[in-house]
Length: 392
Ligand code: NZQ
Ligand code: ZN
Image 1: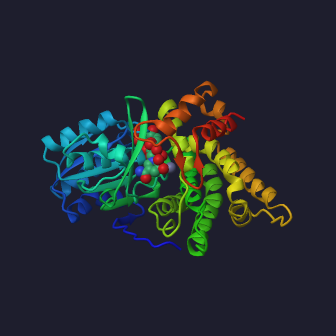
Image 2 (image 1 turned 45 degrees about the horizontal axis):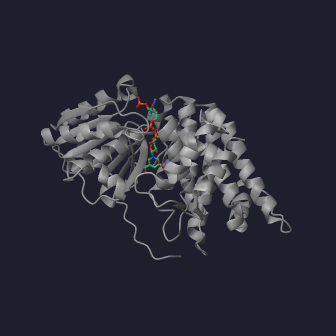
Image 3 (image 1 turned 30 degrees about the vertical axis):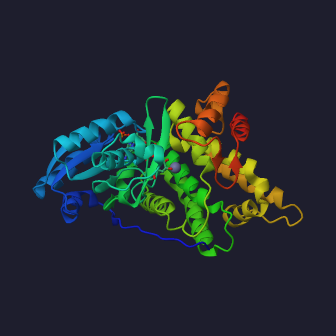
């Protein structure tokens, strides 16, 4: 196991009706003037926004609001939020929504305290100051409720980039699984796929002897395999939603990723798809992941064979471990199809003729060094090959 530090300061408030305590938690963490940030309207339609405002009113906490976050959040609204937060002297940002709203909130929180253009934080990849953030989560997916990451898309050039920092970890996150019951099935499935991706990106490691985190990741992936069909069949299954929601947080606050190298190539390769086509991140991952795994398989066949045996129950073929590994990847792909995820470029709405452009931006866009590095190092040609596999 490698040396590590791990800081996860978020206060989690989990369960039914917990959103009504939002105001009390803002107060607990020192907020006196709040920017409530939300998305395209689901929280207005469900009445959640009104409940949040009522809980702030109850505590005598003032607020301004800014809605309109789009999935794959854009830099334009972050600039608007920064201006508003400065003008209104906001001292706390409360995100009410999914990963996109939370990430946009993190951009505003960091950008408000940054002297230069906030996009520089996403170019260089790290942030060191931010207003405190709280979240009320409405979809189990990105894990931003517990992570120190934020992903934003710059409209100019459609560049999707991330910034990281412990200051971006929420002070509190309110997680009521019942709030996710209004999700359309496709969005539920996209979230499940993203959660599984966060687990796989950590499972695919070059670090030896990391049994404790291997086993934790396997448990979480097996939980997803068990709960996903239950929730797809019965969207009102609170218990299944609860298990998925907590797994989604654990998948990405990095408690299961410490002390080991991680991959993240599927994410890097996917982000260009959701930037260019504005598809859901989870749907892009469903197309990309099995192909990235197949492409990189030979780098460490036994790692993928281990996943196949332990997670997917494939019998180990000691004479031909590669066939075991490939069967695991095939089962993963069928699972994703079974919950309604696209399997290739066509089903995703991506175009074969864009492959060279996609690979170019992935490698060279903004401040990238000309390649991608994770479990293996991928050249632009490798990435083109992977996108081509995604067309099958
Ligand atoms: O905008 P509204 O109207 O709220 O609708 C949203 C949106 O259309 C809807 N939705 C959310 N909760 C709902 C609901 N509809 C009905 N009922 C509810 N309870 O779902 C749609 C998707 O929302 P979004 O916030 O985009 O989803 P998600 O949580 O999957 O976030 C995706 C973003 O997170 C980034 C992705 O790249 C993408 O931009 N990621 C962030 C990470 C992080 N910060 O740590 C890590 C991830 O790997 C990921 O890259
Ligand atoms: Zn993700």
